[in-house]
Image (cartoon, rainbow, N blue to C red; front, side, top):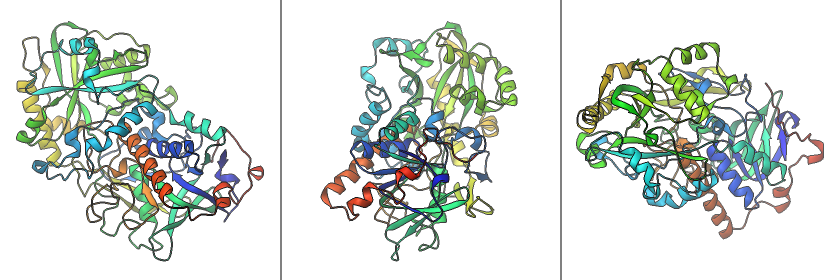
Length: 548
């Protein structure tokens, strides 16, 4: 069933067993898992079934430019609608303590998540995950890697798997709703979580649509609004917690991270090259592809005191090193309607970018004489890089919007510089190629941009003094409130976060179903089956058109 917030009467209360706020990777994976298990799930999404040119959620930026309009989607399916399809697990060292970086790591290990990584890969349309089992890749992939000479004692290949076309959660959610297994409430903004008198249990969610506010009651609430909106909702929920829910130790909103990204240098090969493993190597089945990146060997990361960065060698047809608006690199996965005139001009001014977009769109092999060394850097947790509530801007319902202060630091830049010095000097030293352009860390600092991987701000930890949620994703001190998106990442790690978010969603659903099997529900069954508004009184629309 699909409802729209504009069809709900003012001050009405809707009820469900599970209320999931947000329909991106985290919200969709946990909501679909619970719905398929036969549970009563109400999924709340601020957007409609299509992206609007006037989204109902906004934010302000006070730090380094973050590219918000281009890098998030307020619509059913969330940013999975802009996802490139990369399904890569975090490395083992991403979970571990790294004292040389003053990083505590995760309160989970890679082995804890491996079973859920496998399930997440299947859920996202992959038969397997190359990052989990690189030994199972076809021999042709490994032969192709050898076509670019590097020192294996310094660098190792990192396999990035993706699917064409990517899995779109919107289609799955619409199918579940159409079949009566899921209720989707679109065009509805989550405004405030309202706890009981002790502050230890959320009783209701205050929600809003144009011209009205109403309430949602549930036995369990799961917030999956992303690393920008999840902390905003927690901070705006101050009826029993003056600093916001889960914020007893001032941790909500802290350590906003991303993967600083952009080109650093350019290689020139002695001969025209076709090394599909570094561009797009098709795997059996026709929809899965793998691309190899290069990273420092783990033991060198410790001795050099670097983070877990990696770089791709991207095909280029010329040596011209154009930096410009690096966010254009992400437009290959977006609809033409999302590209404005200035961005079209930017694409046309960069033959290398245009070439890569064309080969990606047309699916033709890449032949190239130059290779752009394009970095995906790991940003370290920094408490001063954060989300707060804007002191000036409010939304249509009078609640402060998120104020985004993204702040990579000199420690991040020193780490990358150390990585580059070793990777380029000894890792890539070869008679088969040379540096056509050697970048500098100063150039990188001036030009890098967001990879659209919004991470941290409500981090997982062993105790509430260091984070917002425990390893089960339950908010400390609130026994029926869980978070399930990239806000819970303690570190950024070295991978696109989508597979990890999905794995965490499956793991959370399993935890909730197991707990429900142990304890009887305290919510009367009639409340779990029916909302306080009859379905016949609300127009059901598969378009889900919300306010624009």
